[in-house]
Length: 266
Image (tube, rainbow, N blue to C red; front, side, top):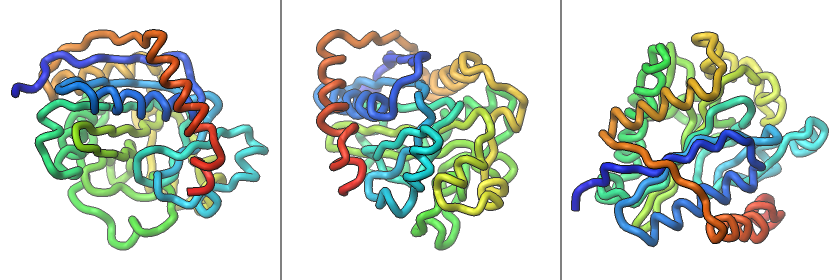
């Protein structure tokens, strides 16, 4: 079977709640699970600013929930792995796919690297000289430090500083990978909310605006859309959610992503 030459593109310019964003990503993965050789590329925003944590993290150990409430910051557990991320004035991407080029590989790492090349092209399209990290840092991956405390293998860095953080989930017939591309600089707040010394994030993390002074979401999303188009040689077709889609997404919000059971008790 050949890879699909057309992918669905979703540009979610209106910010959504953390619950809605994770429900949509899971919904798109489930859609791919049921249908062969389709791909959804989505770019989206968050409101309010929110912290997401990895599927297996302990919520109270990695995030200051008292401060979350004081600052009006949202919170959600992702269906993917990884560490805590602050989503605030960023471009968030997700890719859900049953494309043979991803599903045929038994390795999470191989697919991660494939997608990293597209993300790298997005940064290069903006004029940011970045590179893909070749190896994991020793020991740090097993800590409770937040996602942007260190660049891991196949993620992307600029002069040693992490600029994109991603996480992935695989099932039998589909993959979901999503990630944070910070635009503006909120490292102080990120550090406060995740119990980390601000000096660590200031040393390990950068943003698009810090690198090139650019903060226009539309321009940045276009650069990354082009990066995926160039890397995978695909065309895009706009996807609109129908009523059934919206109903299914709302069920995931109500029954899973907005519940304390999902967010705190795992």
